[in-house]
Image 1 (cartoon, each protein chain N blue to C red):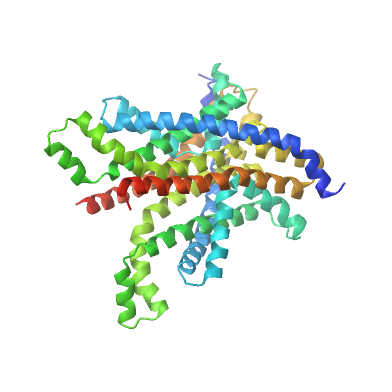
Image 2: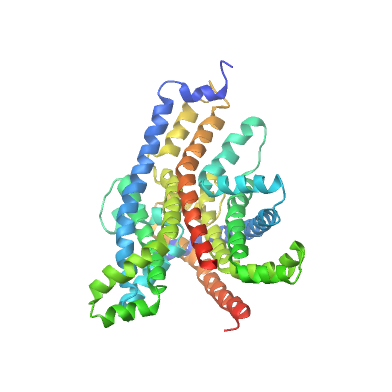
Length: 229
Length: 220
């Protein structure tokens, strides 16, 4: 077993490097999620306002991010920011920006869906007791919407984490990029190392996403049971 | 050369990529629906052993990125003498991913059928098979249409990831051209339009379909 492929992981600093790559991945996902979810809630609330023009603009924003694949979004920002707008950002920041804007678009739709499914009498009762718009959202609509939207939000989080696998395409040193380097550097010594390196990356993603999606599923199930009596 | 000329000259290549994207998506979606339906039925009828295998498959496939799945298929499996060409890898990967999403879509539909319906069926003495055939499936399929529609759009977009194993679909075509001629704005514009041509009409059709089945389900 001296030259078994799995040893590639324990050769030198390979394992530490892989975890370092994972950290980059997690960092970008975390920052993008925080920014994106906050922006998404704001946009979602704005989309329930009566102003038509505002709603149209936000709807177009959503549809753009829905229709263009994330790979293409990454390249659009990667090439066009520096070339057309003269903004030179490192690839990490470009990726964070893209993921944040994409998260915001998806989140705005989740928030809007939850807000409009709060029963109408709640909104009307709130207005009847003289709440202004801010108070109405703050005390009546948002608290009720949160419980409705939580499973969908967690699913969005798992999607964003999975999508960070695309970071390697714009040469961010994420876990997959590091994995490729490890594979290439050790190909002579460990011909089957590629299996173990991509294997551990597979396990890493699963270990992060599985608990989250399990949690979301459980909440959904509970809600379904409550709804079905 | 003007931008317009650049775009014009690249169109034949983009057309090839466009057709390949459509073709791979089509096979991938059909395959995903078949795999998803099988998994969902195994779960619904609680087939021993197979339903557990399906459940494990669904969790693994749903919680890992397509890109990593493709890398596994394309780079890791050949080490053990299991070699597929890039396009076959892409299709297998897409079906591996899509199967679980479709399974969840069908499951959601079947679970969504109201308890009253199921209990009424049981009360009039339907067997589990009859219950499935006459009560749960007709309503369940209808309820799952929105999820399936979302999955179809999702899977088409995921084909853009095929570029990492050098399948010459739309995204790969654009990135190749950018690499050769450095005209990123022009090629990216064509690329976005390419996806828009596929996805905008499709999402409109699917929305209409959703409305139509909702009408069929509830008559309102």
